[in-house]
Amino acid sequence: MREQADVTGQTEPSILRATLRLHDIAEDEPYLSRYQVGLAQEYDDHRQELLRRGRALPGARETLSMLFSDQHVVQSVLSGNLRAVSMIKLETFDLDRYLDVEVGAYGDDESDRPRLVAIAQKRAETKYGAPFGRENTIIIGDSTHDIATGKTGGASTLGVATGSDGIDALRAAGADAVVPDLTDAAEIHKLLRSLIN
Image 1 (tube, helix red, strand yellow):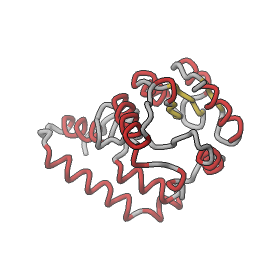
Image 2 (cartoon, rainbow, N blue to C red):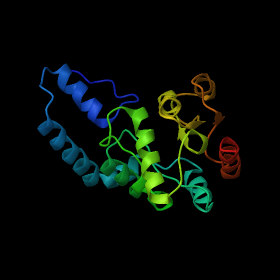
Image 3 (cartoon, rainbow, N blue to C red):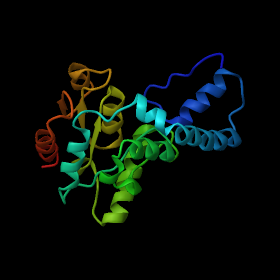
Image 4 (cartoon, rainbow, N blue to C red):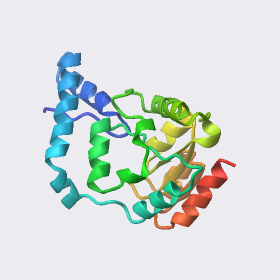
């Protein structure tokens, strides 16, 4: 590669298209299809390296477990990553068991991140027979891009200041609530309940 596309807040297909444009390569379906297969295969082949170099954030498992035990909560994934890549990451750190990944939305569903919110809401409505909208959908994210995705897409937002964007940046982006990290599962549960009542 001569140049690297900006990946911040982008879906995987958007990153590929931008990379192709930077290198004067025509954007066509064969590239995207091969990329989707190849990227997922690379992640799958390097699960051990991912486990060695990465980690689940402190409190993530406990928070997911607490929310999973609440029968009024449906937890899923909204990610710019491809579905297969998202699953490999979650499985590697044993977090997938707490999530209904069927009702999530991923980079291979739509290249515009805010539109993923409606896709996930529709999938949840279909599966659970209940409406999902701004009043009962919450996007939890650690970047101002995540907050913008939720706000634009039709959800409330909880900012978690464990990424490169701190508490003040997440608040300035319009997060409905912000926590410093995931270590207080009970407080996060309480905050989330307050956002939908």
